[in-house]
Image (cartoon, rainbow, N blue to C red; front, side, top):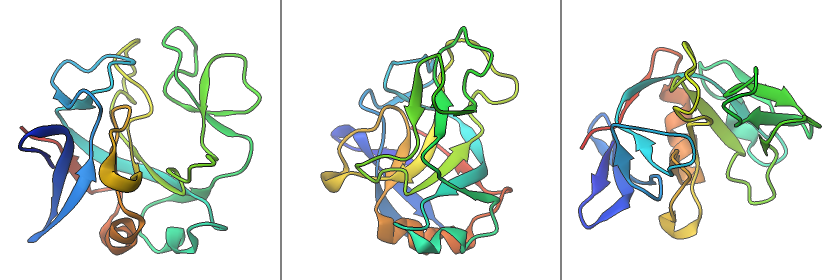
Length: 168
């Protein structure tokens, strides 16, 4: 994955010989990722697992990745001082969190990248996902996002050994 020339918040994802457009963080790609900076980490990140909404994206199970359904009580903690920082949590949750079941459908398929998972370091960034893009590939908060059609095409090829490499 690399940024699109002239637009650091958009990029190109190469899978084999095929290239797909993608959205990146609003701050582009950064080697010094910090919580809330809006940057996509410059890193090689393994895809660990994923979540999907069966009512919105029934093909979410067509992959070798471990996938779990997104229920209304699934969240992701984004508070560096919390013991569950950068981990899934059950909503309602006392600390600030991201709701995984979103009205905008960005997380109808949401793959967890291993950024700041083990070990977790406070303030290094949370919820770095590979998910669905908004129309026009508008910027993410630091994630990588593709169209639903691209995701459906990629899912059967992915496993927990797949590495997403973000380069400059």
